[in-house]
Length: 155
Image (tube, rainbow, N blue to C red; front, side, top):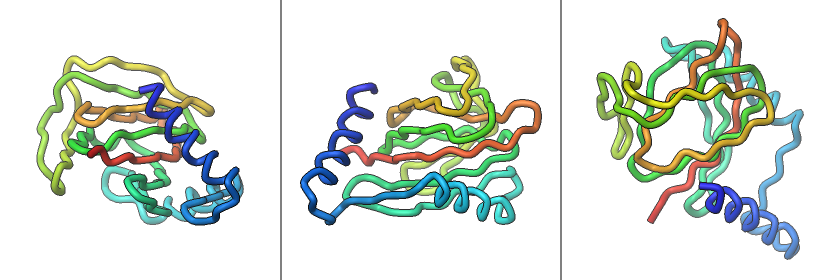
């Protein structure tokens, strides 16, 4: 997982250092915060809203705003590299999804996870979730959480 995150970061740096603007993306902290704020009024019944802000090759860049526990997730072909921007939450990963239903090709959502590992996460934390690993982010004490995700489609 660490190698995947490092490869993505290195590939982005190499593009930027080469001076070639093709494929280069840049967002300021203020821009990210504005996008997160704009998602709040658009939340669904699970108190969740995400928005893809760019796609480049096999990478999608996504902003996520969450005010509730939401659902467990499973991506058959995408790994997630998550950069936690605000709030505190419990990340549950691994185990078995409860009540899994297919929501799109290669995508499932469920009501929870049984037998997973729980980890406290907060501002500044970065974690990589490989494809096919159930995961769920649950904000602590009703907090609002925001995170930036690089979704990498695997061949």
